[in-house]
Structures are given as C-alpha cells and as structure tokens.
Image (cartoon, rainbow, N blue to C red; front, side, top):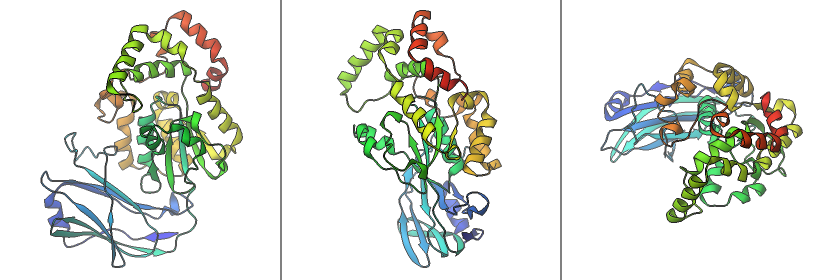
Length: 365
C-alpha cells in the first residue's frame, strides 16, 4: 500500500498562481480507505492565461518526465472556469514507486516548482478494471462523467470504443482483450463485446434502458450525430430520408436484440459481486440512490467536493450543465417514457411483442 504525505506548496507557488487563470491538483491519497488494491494516480488541470502554453513536469527522485496533457471539459470546476476556458489542460499519471515527487509547470524558459509530496511503502496488486457497459444513447455521457468523477485518481479513464468507432472498425472489438487492471472503461457497444476474455477478472457497471425509448433516441441521434463512414453529402441525404419517412418507420426497421442479449448473457455469467445495474431509469428517478450504489460498488466515498460536480448531472440541472449533450444536439430527453409521446399506438404494440422479454428484463432495473 502506498503511504502518501500531504502536498506541500513550494516557493514558486505564489508566483505560479499569478501566471494562470485557474488550476487544480487532486490530492494523491493512499487508497487504504477507498479501494483494497492500493492503486492511485496524480491528476489535475491548469487553465493558462490566454498567451501562455504550459508543459507539466513530474520529477520522481530527481528523474523528470513530461506528462502528456489532454484537453478535456468533463470535470470543470465552475467556481473558477467558464465555458470560454477551452485552453484547460488535464493530466493524470499513475504512482508506481516510492520517493520524493515534485510537480513543475514550464512555460517557455520559465519553470515553476509548485507542489511536493512524499510516497512511502510499496505498491501491492493492481485494481481490477471496471467496465461500464451500456446500451448506446442511454444517458451514456452523463453516467460516464459521474463514474469518472467518482473514480478520478484511482482508475484511468479509457474510452476504447471511441477509437474503433472513429476508425470505422467496431467489429474488431469482438476480438479485443480489454486491459484487466487500473482502468475504468467505457464500452457502449454491447453487440461487439468480446466474451472470449476472462470476464471474471473485471467488475462491471451495467446500464440499460427501455428498448422503445432507446429506439426513439436513436432516431433523433441519427439526425444529429456525425458518421465517419459517410461523406457529408451522403450523410445529409441519409438524414433527409430518415426524416421524411418518420420515426415510426425508423424504429420498426431496427433490431436491438443483440445489444440487450449480450448484456443479459453477461449478467448471467458473472458472479453477483462482480457487477451492478446502474441504469438510466435509476439515474433519472433516484439520483442519490444511484450515487450511493456506485459508491458502495467502487468502495469509494463520495466527498463534498465530488458532489459539487456531480449535482450538475441531476435531471433538474441538466439545462445548466454545459456538458449535457442536449445543449449541443437536439432530441435528448431527461426522463423514461418518451416512446409513449412519440410513437403511434400501433407501433408501440409491435415493439411490445418484438421486445417483450427485454422489456421485462429492464423493468426492475
């Protein structure tokens, strides 16, 4: 288990504060009271002033490495940052050895030694990865923000399906072995899940939603979302065809069975302690219960600092949440049951018969 000291501010701290718009460093902590596996990460972010560009340097026992920054917006501290802060740089690195750690920020010829802490003892076995497996268009992004906010500093976020989608190689996921330790993995293509890997080495957070609602979501999604497999001209023609034919014809032309059947199969194969259902319905109807279940499953206490960020994901706060997809694309919803408003009675009856077993499976989740 790592024993990590409190963070000390070094001599350059005050000067550094004057040179940036905002910054944050997640206090690295031993996971003794959070996760029995004892893995942890250093993570944080910096918002440079408009004319500044920073490198983030981590020194371990005098050996330096430059942390690769990734621009991200999912954990904006709204006490400091506004929607205009697109320069925000996030970083994260796993603690793998003991010794003296110093974090520096370099801007051109200037360098600021800002934070220092000590890591003692030795690491023990790594944490089993958590796979967040979800049907698509099911509040996936909101839940991902929640999960990664709670897991920050303990698990490394991994959006593996994005890489395959952007390269138009989703089918290759069916033979891809996922990393078995230290990752929290977004997997929003259950039809492409690889069952040939040792699934009992993972923990699973499972999200599903009513297939009738999901079909309505996919209709609206198809009219807004980019498709890397099509040219812009072909995509516009495709969308116009969908729009002209209407939502009822669209939902009746789709078959979601394999998405749900793979999740049903997965939940039947796993030991009960290896998975939890945290669904769209639960998120909308019992947000605090959703968070409590997530906290217990990950064995991570939700702090007041976390709650300041997490409260933005409540359904009543989504319109004020700059990260909510509904503020970017139309057609998003915030409560179960949209199919009742958008589909004809005849279409609903057909779907009820087509997905009767899946609807029953979803009802108590």
